[in-house]
Amino acid sequence: MKILVTTVPGIENIAVQEIGELCPEAHSYVASSSGRVTAELPENCLAQIITRIHSAENVYLLLGEADRLEEVGEELALHAKELIAWHRYFSVRAERITKDIETTSLEIASKIGRIIQEKTGLEVSLDFPDIILYVEYEAGRYRYGVYLTHAGNLRDRPYRRYIHRSALNPVLAYAMCRIASPREKLWDPFCGSGTIPLECLSVDPGLKALCSDVNSDFIRGALENSRSINKTLLLFTCDIGHAPVRNFTVDAIVTNPPFGIREKAVGGLKRSYEALFRLARHNLEEDGKLVVLTTHRRLVEEISRNMGFDTTGTWRIYEGGLTSFIYKLQPK
Image (cartoon, rainbow, N blue to C red; front, top):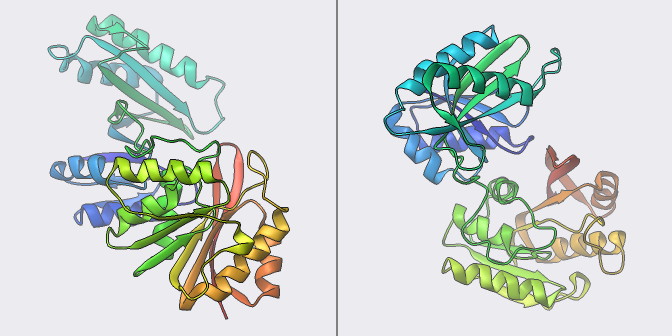
C-alpha cells in the first residue's frame, strides 16, 4: 500500500521520522514537491497513521500513475465502481504541482469527474461527497487515488476551543517540540492560546509546561484549551521583559514571537527578541535549547551573535504564502 502524506513545507523529514515510529515497516521518502512525503507500508499500519500522526495535514491513498488524463479517469472509474454499493456521491480534488501544462487544477478535476459520472452513474456532490477522489499532475505524470482525511484536516486539534487571532498551525508547533526534545520542563513565553505547550505535551505527557503571555485574554484561552483535553499548563500573565521567574530553569524554550503582522510586539520587535534571548540565557539549563519560529532572520542572527548563542539547526518553512524559519539555538 502506498500513501501520500502532506505537511507544512520545510518539516517533511520530521513527518518521515514520525511515520517510521508509528509503522517501523514503512519505507518513507520526501517527494519531489515540498510539503509531501510518500510512504509504502502494510495495510495494518494505515489506521495507525491516520489516527495518531501529528506532523501531517492530510493523507491520500495512492492507487496508480498514468501519462494521460483520460487513462486516469478510466482507472478511477473502475475503482469507483467497486464502491457503488456503499457510496452514491463523489467529488474530485485535483492539484497541478508543476505548471508545464495549461490545464488548471479545476479543469483536471472537472474532466475526471465527467468521465467517472459517465462510466459509473455516480453523482457529483461538492458539498457532501461520500468519497473524494484525488488526482495530481507533476512533470508529465498523473498520480491518482483516494482522499482519506476529507472528514477533517489532521491539523484540526480537539483542544482548539479558543482560537488565537494569529494562531500557530499545530503541525508546525509539533515539529518545533520534536526539534527541541525537552526532557522535563519547557516554557513558551509568547504562548498565545497554548498551542506549542499543548503540542509538546502530546510528544511527552510527563512534561512540565510553562505558558506565559502579556495578554491575559490569551492566557484564559490557553486555560480553556488545556482543560478541554484534561492537560495541565503552568499559566501566568507577564511581559517578556519582566518575567517573574528567577530561579526556575527549563530544558527548552519553544516559542513563536510576534511577527509584527497581525500581532504587534509590546515595546517593539527588537526589544522583545532581546528580552527573549536574555531570558533564555538566564533560565535555560546548561545544555538547554531555544527553538524560535520567526520571519525576522537577520534580527535573530544578529542578537544570537551578540548574546553568545550557537545556531545548531535551521529549517526554512513556507506556509500561507509566507516564508519563515525555525532556529534551534544554544547558549555558548
